[in-house]
Length: 171
Ligand SMILES: [Zn+2]
Image (cartoon, protein in one colour):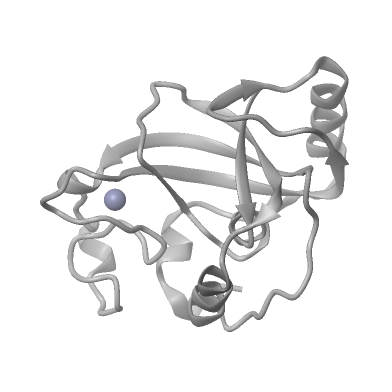
């Protein structure tokens, strides 16, 4: 299974707060199960403030240096070609062209790739693990533990991306 290291609080936002798009400056052709690894270092205070603004949740502490979730990477598009689905036209502060309120970038700079995350499963028991850059392969023993958790626990806590674009329905 491939893995992606994401700094907190974003990893927690993916695992538990409905973050349905991961913003990256680089593209990937990989699709399928993707383990979300919470990096050992946190992003800025501004990131924490932003998550609070989007979810109403103030994250004070959460797991780091561990696999915290498994998602389905369903598609990737450039912010320059990002178009909000017709059924999600209600107003929010990302402007009219983003696929999710979590998406960033612009229509003109080609600068960001939106990795669309489908089903997201928060691991009941985060698995300590060292992170890496880019897409990386989980060590076999970690993958076995991840697969065991997602097959035996009620890890399926949040559904498809569409239920997360609507802020009113975000848990
Ligand atoms: Zn988009």
